[in-house]
View 1 (cartoon, rainbow, N blue to C red):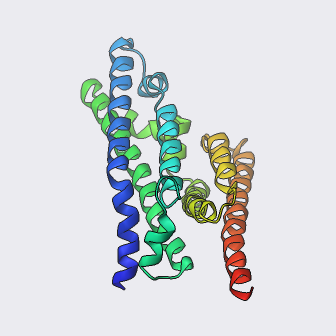
View 2 (view 1 turned 180 degrees about the vertical axis):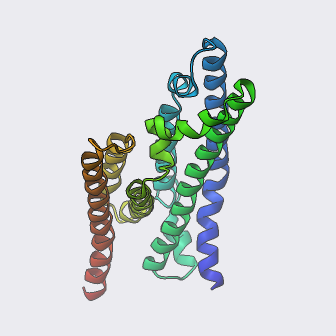
Length: 244
């Protein structure tokens, strides 16, 4: 068990400090943009309008992309031979990938949690200044980015988000495994493109619920298929190498 913990800690040590810096940068940038939008806004403007003007979705998208790059590069043979370090721990390649999936899922979840926390703080600042407590609750229904991030009363959105997290964890873990074999992994690139294009969904209404439900289903199904193909390809190639 100590060998497995050592592999997990190896990944954590290589990502912890960059991840902390990334989250701090996200908080600072979003805080500054929100402050600028809030101070320049007229008193009649609501929280949704101020958040729209401060563009937290763009900041989060950039941080999400940077985190995916960090996770993909962790374990790659760039500059130093990661294969040698991992082989010294003497656990199977399958278990190495498994622990990297667990590690990546944890960091992706923490990025989501920190983004939700930052937005809650910003909403709290607005509430303290304006006294409109109800606005802080309603904005998670009115603002498409906030609702996509924390889909209150929309189970389909929530399930889709969990699938996205799991699939991205698999995709980012498969990237270095394929790179160490000299292959060109493409699964994570497709996943990231799908997330950027379809993550932002408005709350479903009676007219749009069927369309949004189809988007959730398409996005979930596509991510599951891509993640399954990526991990199956690695396992199949490992079996072929063992037989040859």
